[in-house]
Length: 219
Length: 252
Image 1: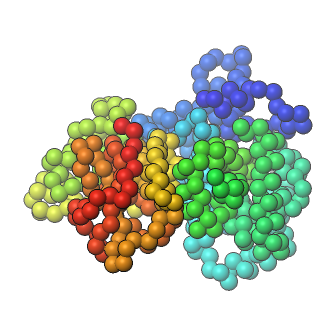
Image 2 (image 1 turned 45 degrees about the vertical axis):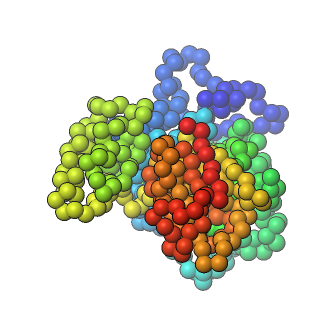
């Protein structure tokens, strides 16, 4: 697991503490050496056990991740019933493909969310007609970051950390990433929504994600 | 190296590429280790954003999933080989996949029973047996193969054209990625073939007419040693009727 070892290295100057969701840097010196000492380790271990058909391990995986996967699907699809359907498909795919998870390439949660995001976005694109999407752009332009910037009193510490880092991005990069990730727009659609040339939208998405990657120390 | 394609790793990780760009980038990923590393890191970066949208799902979702997985073994632990015309000689349960325990799973015994039952049905009816354990919602895609953790790759050049073969034993499928392929002769098509360890070739599909494409090959690709492309009459052939114009070998 070279990635985790890399993350033990000191962060670059100006780095922002990375929320604990995927790779937790370092190990607690006072804990025993079981993987359950860190949620991300425990998740990776449970996911690996799924590949052997361990249904109890799958239940653990579900309990540790379902709010994140379902919440993301709700956000992208803007419809709870559809989000539920997508989650059903996604978790079944995760169960079936659990042997494909490779901890040396990234976090278990990252692997799972990638599958969930792809499914949710593909469903949005398949089901939403072009006219409907144009209306959606209008709504997005008016209030592109309404739901996410509204600070919830019950927000998790991780969410607060993520939000603080996002706020360090230039607004235009933040908006572009927001529209792509949470609203499932392609970069062509992001360009149209923000009334930008396509090349500019692409650059904002790329530079914004680069900044986040650096800030969170993802190697 | 294509600088434009390298630049797409971040947008790919956000699922922000158009469908045709996604296909092209996945083909590029097959051959570019730098971009595979970038995509892995960007995917983990994007995943952090999901901290902002947590919502607890209804309890019914968990109940329904637990029931569903009980009837659906993970792919690494279950045979995914299609039933062939002779199911007796292809009992996949007799050869557990490497690295997986041969016994001890509750459904292993169920699997033996299922295979036996299917074999009897197939013999009695003289027909092909469908794959009831493969849900149509979880079909393997070319992208799955290209990004599989156990994917192995090899590339051959013929003139300006490149043909890359990517195979995943875990998924049991292979993908052929071509760039700059010249058009087939008039009234002829390209047909792909999987090469097996005994040297035999099995038909893996007639290739669409396109110089750059990513094609999920038909057939069980586990432990295949390569893939080739031949020029065939329209519709393809049951056996190659000409020598392959390109043959991509994989390490054993």
